[in-house]
Amino acid sequence: MVQVREPSYAKGMARREEMLEAAIRAIAGSGFRRLSLREIARESGVESAHLVYYFGSRDGLLQAVIERWDADTQVARAAEADPDRPLDFLVEHVRLNLYVPGLVHLLHSFAAEAIAPSHEAHAFFRRRYALAAKVVSESIAAEQAAGLIPRDLDPAAEAQRLTAVSDGVQLQALLDERVDAVALLAGAVEALRSLSDDPAVRLGDESVPLLTSLRKGLAAPV
Image (cartoon, rainbow, N blue to C red; front, side, top):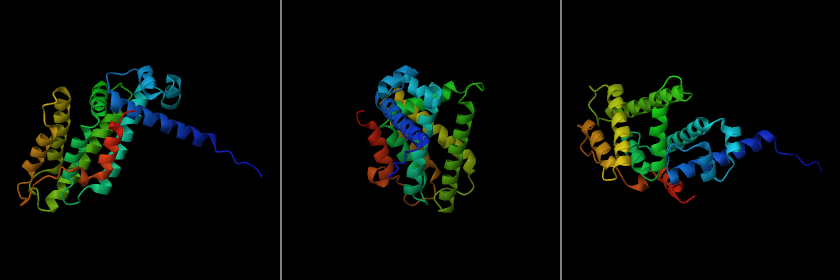
């Protein structure tokens, strides 16, 4: 019987996935302090040379971490967001980010590093924020159609404001744990819902079990 070997490409992708998951858990659990590639490798339990081979550089690895984080969030959003009240999911997303402050710190720190047009992740973050604004704009439009938000508001403009509030309150919460990022964002959402008879925002874990599992899983000890 001829033994069929798994293609080296498939093995390589599996190995890359293992290292990416390890890096995500290391950053989520230990925090992000402008970690070097060597430090991330040590926290992840792998050799730094392996990270370089699969991700090219520290920035390449950090971008992959954020891309995975975003992808997991979008999978959860597609499965769990209420089509008539999708802004509830935005509030839930921020609340569950409190379980992984290291990843939130990474996002803000890396985005700040990439402001310079010459930075290799500059285009990535421009696309990322454009997509985030589009998703929030579509959520506002959906709530307008459901009669929860006034139709005369510009979804794109309100999305930019709401995204700024979301980023800002999360950054403030990193600096001062007394800041209630969830309440502040929920208040901004409620300010838009002037037509709703029952504007309460759902804040229970049971409303988004997939995202809850992802965030709490990352918060577990490495």
